[in-house]
Length: 443
Ligand SMILES: O=C(O)C(=O)C[C@]1(C(=O)O)C=C[C@@H](O)C=C1
Image 1 (spheres, protein in one colour):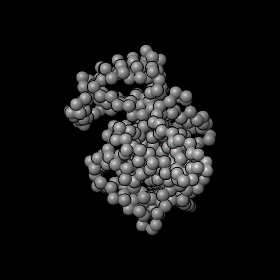
Image 2: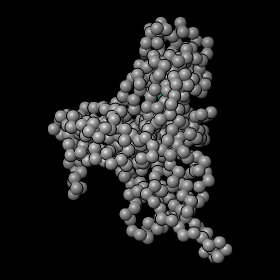
Image 3: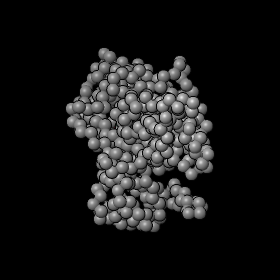
Image 4: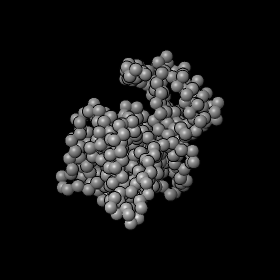
């Protein structure tokens, strides 16, 4: 079983396959040996990401909002391509949409009429309705299933998060977060899911850096209760173990419980929880256990030595979903907005920025600072001239308001005055699903 991989910057990628019972998303199924996708360097990937428009044009797959300004005849013919897709795909997508960013608009557009002229005498066709901006939201145009890239192998919590965010999606395993981003940028996937913080382990810093480096938009969030198990090969007893392997977050979320269980053995970090289980099974390691989900135990033929070993029964990981295009912010349900900002004159800007939200009664749900000194950011001015700027720190803030609200727009206008760099990472519906520790969905 293989996943999208990234050996260095030149990515030779392949897609994993897996069986996917129950609640979990289905997987890309390919023949023996896997479908090999030749990816390109990060530089090329960014270029490709910026040329989504032409990719859309040639493939008729999707339709970025950047196309709105093109010549009228091109716009009309593009509408016709879109319309033909709409009619042929409408039924399927009505069934399958309804995921976290709730996108049904493009594929579900009901009004364009493609009845040939000669038939129209029988039943007069209604005039086509112009496309509206909501029609341009990033629903998949290639088929009925949304393709969602995640880091890890089947059985990873990120896969469960993909399934929670987009039920019935096609989950695409990737061996690194960077690859999941590139899968979306290169149109191999429609969305990526990315863990950003855990209730016990705190922020997953590397992913904040990735959000800044790539040009994807946050279009939703899910909170996933994470219920860890200790897995070993069948017949292995706790006393035989001299190593526990897992994702570093999972190891830290279970540290006290492992010690209480008397497992004072070596801890070793690997790329993902389910990958740890797969590794033990593949190499028949009878002295090693993995921290992973019950689904990973099932997939890789492992036994569960202990169930619910997270140090806190309320262990939750927050994931964000990323897409090539932002969603249109609304005010009819609770929204969250994520921004990143910096100022070249240091960190004193922070107080001013926070006050812009405080004065408007906008609650912050997250604030994170990341040192950034050695990585310049390219700022582009009104004349499209770019300059590299070094910022000591980048600040990430999530606040509870939609960018469609005037108070949020005013707060950001003020923040923009105080800062030399400001980017809205996304304005998206908040995950409001109630959950209880015992109904853990991550296993
Ligand atoms: O390794 C996995 O299974 C993941 O999905 C990654 C990850 C993480 O990065 O935090 C996700 C949820 C849990 O907090 C543990 C690990």
